[in-house]
Amino acid sequence: MVRLTEDNEVVSWYKEKFEAHKKLIAGVVGGIVVVALILSTTNLLSIILLLAESTDRKDLCPIHNKISPQSFQFDNTTVFDILNGESFRLQSVQKLSGAVQVDTQIGDNQPDVEDAPELWAKFKDFHKYLEETFPVIYANLKVEYVNTYGLVYTWKGSNKALKPLLLTAHQDVVPVQKDTIKDWTYPPFEGHYDGKFIYGRGSSDCKNVLIAILETIELLINKGVEPHRTVIAAFGFDEEASGIRGAYNIGQFLEKKLGKDSIYAILDEGPGLMPDPLSGLIIAAPATGEKGYIDIVAELTTPGGHSSIPPDHTSIGIMGELAYIIEKDQYSPLLTTKNPVLNYLQCLAVNSNALSTLAKKAILRAGFDKFANSKVVKQLSQNPLSKYLIKTSQAIDIIEGGEKANALPENVKLVVNHRVAVETPLKDIREHFTNRVIEVAKRHDLGVVSFGKTVLNGTSGHFELREQQGLETAPVSPANDTVWKYIAGTTRHVFEDLVFTNKTEPIIVSPVLMPANTDTRHYWDLTRNIYRYSPFFSPDDISESHIHSVDEKVRVDGHLQLIAFFYEYIQNVDTAFADN
Ligand SMILES: *[C@@H]1O[C@H](CO)[C@@H](O)[C@H](O)[C@H]1NC(C)=O
Ligand SMILES: *[C@@H]1O[C@H](CO)[C@@H](O)[C@H](O)[C@H]1NC(C)=O
Ligand SMILES: *[C@@H]1O[C@H](CO)[C@@H](O)[C@H](O)[C@H]1NC(C)=O
Ligand SMILES: *[C@@H]1O[C@H](CO)[C@@H](O)[C@H](O)[C@H]1NC(C)=O
Ligand SMILES: [Zn+2]
Image 1 (spheres, rainbow, N blue to C red):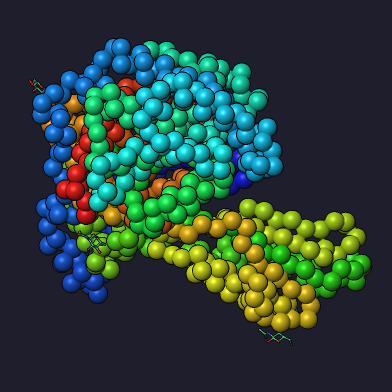
Image 2 (image 1 turned 30 degrees about the vertical axis):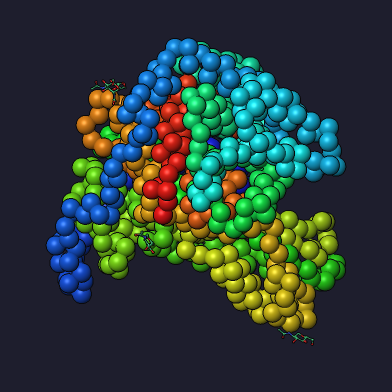
C-alpha cells in the first residue's frame, strides 16, 4: 500500500481500517436508539416507516453460492495439500523468505530509471531471483519488461473471446528507517521464519501476494492445467512512490496492447478476511473503492516593506484569516448508495445480531430514506474514525512565510490536504476552495489566480492556487454482478469448506472503502471490476502484520490461504459462465 503523503505521517492502513471498523460498528450500535427516541412530531411519518421496516432484507447483502472448480470434484487433494501439506508449506516459506531477502526498498523522490540506473539495479537482482525460483513460469509464460523493471507475465488462454484476468502486486517495499533496525526482532532482510510467521520488509506488503500469484500459476501448470481464459500477472516497482514509473507504464502498455475495458477483472493487494469484533462473524472485505486525494497550495504575494509602517493586515495575517474560514467550514458528511460503507453496514445489519433492531432498520433504509439516512450519518459522524469514511477531510498541513522580524512578509504559502468523499469530483473541491479564497481576497483587494485562471482582479497583491498532487476518487467497482459472485463464491468455498471446516454461519463477503491507494489507480481504464483483495484470514488484531513498520511479518497460514484462493479462483473463472 502506498503512503499518501511525502512526510512521515504514514499510518499503516490495515491498522487504520481495523480500528475504523471497530469504532464504526460501536458508534452505530450505541447511538441510533437514543437519537430515534427523541421523537419530534414533524418526523412522525418517517419514524413510523422506520419502525415498520423489516430487518429481513437479505437482498441487500446476498450470500452467494459457493463455487469450486470442476477439478475439485475429481480430486480435492491439491488444495488440501496447499493448505496443510508440510512439504508444500516449507517450499512456500522458502520462496517467500527468499523474496524478502532481496532488498527492493525505494524512496519517495527517486530519479527515473534512465537517469539513475544504479539506483534501480536492485530490481535486476529481484528478477534474477524470480527466474531461478520459478523456472516453470519462465519456461511457459511470456515475460515482458515494461520501463525496464515492470514485469508482465502472460499465461495465454485458448479462448480469445474470454477477457484476460489480471492479478497484480508490487515488487518494491518501503524503506526501513536506519534508527529502527535495532528494534527488529529479526533483521528486516533476513526473511526469518519462526514456524508461524515470516518476518521482514515486504513480507506482508506485498511480496506475499506477488509470490502467491507465481506459486499458484506454477502449480497449475505442473498439474497440467491449460487455461481457456488468459491470465496476466503484472508487478510494478514503485507502488510505494505512487506507481508513476511501474504501474503507470504497465497500464499504458496493456491498454495499447489489449484496449480499454479489455480485462475481465483485476485483483490487487488489499484487505482480506477478519473477524467482526462484535458478532464474531467472519467478514471478507474486497475494497471496491478508494477515496480521492488532493493537496491544494495557496500562495499569497503582497508588496514588502518596512514593518514600522505596516498595513493593517500583512500577508501572514490574511493567510491566517483564510485558514480560519477553511477550518470553520467543514465538509458535510454524506452517505449514498455509491459508498461501499453503506453496503458494508447493510451486510452487518442483515447478518449480525450485535446491532440493535432500530439501528438495523435505520441502516437498511438509509439508501433511500432521508430521515433514516440522517440518523446513520449523525451516528457515524460522532466518531472521529468513522466520520471520514463518509466525508471529505481537510487538513492544513503546511504554512510558510516571513523572513525577518522587521520586514513585511511578501510571500506566504499554505498547503491543505484533502481526502475526498467517493461522491465528490476534485473539481468541486477546487471550486469550493477557490470561493473561500475569493471571500478573503475581496476583503483585502487582492487578485486570485485559481488553477491557472484569473478569477478576481485586485491591486494589493494576489493569491495563486495550485494543485500539488491530485487523484480523483476511484470509480467504485460493482458488488452485484457475476464477477463479484465468483469472488464471493470462491471465497466461501475456500474458507468455509477448506479452511474453517467447523464454521456454521456463512462468511459474509462485503465491499469496503480503502482509505489509501494502490497501483490500481493506473488501471482504471482496463476494467470496471477492480478489487483490492488479498483473501487470507488474520485471527488476531489485523495490525499484527505491522506493514510499513518495525517487525513487518506475515502469517504463513495466511500465505497458503492466498495460494488456495488463487488456485481455485483462476480455475473458477476459466469459463464464459463467469462473465457478466
Ligand atoms: C475430498 O474428497 C474426498 C474423497 O473423494 C471426500 O471424502 C471429501 O469429502 C472431499 N472433501 C471435500 C471438502 O469436499
Ligand atoms: C482582470 O483584468 C483584466 C485586465 O484588465 C481583464 O482582462 C479581466 O477580464 C479581469 N478579470 C476579471 C475576473 O475581472
Ligand atoms: C448493480 O448496481 C448498480 C448501481 O446500483 C446498478 O446500476 C446495476 O443495475 C446493478 N446491476 C445488477 C446486475 O443488478
Ligand atoms: C474451529 O477451527 C479453527 C481453525 O481450524 C480452530 O482454531 C477453532 O478452535 C475451531 N473451533 C471449534 C469450536 O472447534
Ligand atoms: Zn502495498
